[in-house]
Length: 136
Image (cartoon, rainbow, N blue to C red; front, side, top):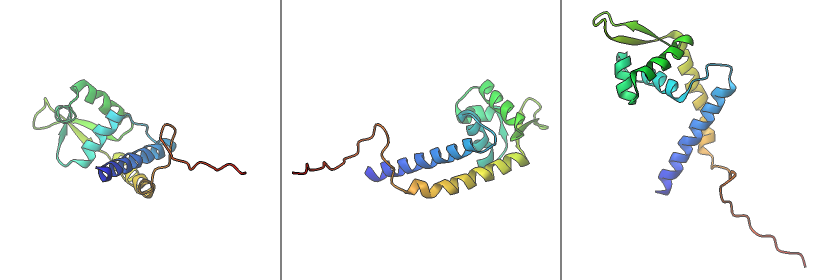
């Protein structure tokens, strides 16, 4: 149980350090939903549709559409009508999106050693400090 907790804390530290590095860079600022849609499109093989993404992420189609609107504004993904089924909208990767994914991987690799270090005490955590003996 303790090892699983340590591993989870390391993963959360890696996530935090990666997100902080992304925030500090002068680049796109994505919401959690937008990042979830982006990563699903780029890390899972196959064609992605608005309907399929909504089902996969368990959110409404309008929520996916709003996320894709933002990703489209940033040229990280684009939508295209499916030529085989004109009622369906396909989500396509872009060169800029592939570059953004590479940058994310790089930031995660840079943050990775920090995740392996023991976590420092933070406000709200309990840290045992030995009591000083009075001189006397």
